[in-house]
Figure 1 (cartoon, rainbow, N blue to C red):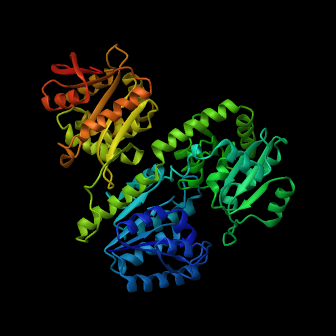
Figure 2 (cartoon, helix red, strand yellow; figure 1 turned 45 degrees about the horizontal axis):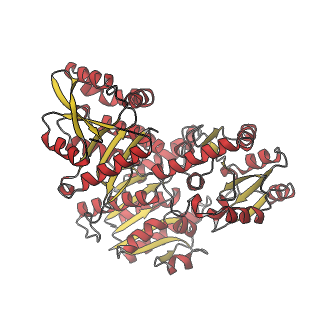
Figure 3 (cartoon, rainbow, N blue to C red; figure 1 turned 45 degrees about the vertical axis):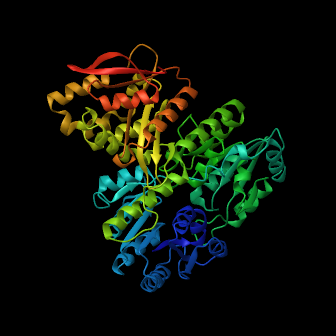
Length: 581
């Protein structure tokens, strides 16, 4: 089998999609990177990734160069005959999808790293970008979209055929970007290298030196800060872009004490030297640097735009400011700079958020699962079929549709599935996002094959669900909920807030049929109970239909004991079980 990834430049292959390249390489698949040639090609080839150059490919706007790059790609695809062509970035994503399909590639997959237009852009730009996207998406077999906001836009405007759009999310290497890897001595050495003392506040940015990343506002903001602050900019020049930072602007900032470190491969070590991370971008898909900073336990200041909102939960792990608002940026930096306890609290929340939302291995698993599903549909043989070893991990937002399906198929006699898959998906997104919730999944490398979900406080979760998801969930359930019998049971469910025993609650668990009978459900439940206990739960409750003897037996294996019966729904007896027994 042969898989080719198409990007604009080799930097994207090396730092944006390398884990996906490595995953297919490790399955024994001939894995190819196609991009403009550059300095990162030797490293790719040393790691077993064959590279094919597109000499005409550029990051800048050049129609003639883009046409030449498209012609070069056509010759590459006709010669190499890949089984899967996976396109990335705006321009290769457009011509790559079309040419791949016309050249007879069996499977064409595209990743939307961020729609090139946002709802805030002028109408003409949106019209052109959305029209091109709508055309190109008709030539792919799957659209993997990193941002949930882009998924909503694509579905609302019908920019891709129904059923072809999948929320991918984004992630980073959580083992590499881990603050515990760096000792206090290593952090001190890194700070000395950038000229920062122990009492100074290091404020850092990571990104290409272009205006779109918000460097002009950042430089203006740090110029207003007092001498306690040290500003660091990490990232390469990007002279192909029309908004590349002028050299005189960089020179002036350097005179004022801003450190420009250029492109660095030890960025994890440099995050460890920072106190605050800033990303005042004008446009983002799903910013990797902000995820890395959050994983490194840094509070993040970012602009209130698509992508940044996926990383920063306001006043939880960071602060959102307006685009181009240097004054807001100054205030946010000073707020964090003046409050070490706030920095610590937000940094710890950022690390927790990264562990639950930004796991790179989960993203890779979803990509491989897409390949396998399409390969099966197209009759293409793919090594490494699903069904091997399984691992337990924390659920991420992109798992919600699968968990909704597992719930509906595994607990089909329950009430909630009667409200439909869109409602169920919304419910699981709410559970995954709920700060006092816990959702663990079994993942066999292709995605979730089982899960367990629960909360520390059932009543608090339902209030959270109604406040943040109530309207959307209600609209999703409306076609079914208008029936009196369904609306009555929905009201009974929402009124249920658990018993008065202050117990946390296991709300649902389900496994794929082929995973049953192997003790995996019991192991998953044990992990869930242990983690809830670590978060302060002294007891855990589960409510199950009294007629469901199989589920009751499974919960007994986990250590639950029967504590009584209740009626969540009128006329339907449910058994209440408590752990520990």
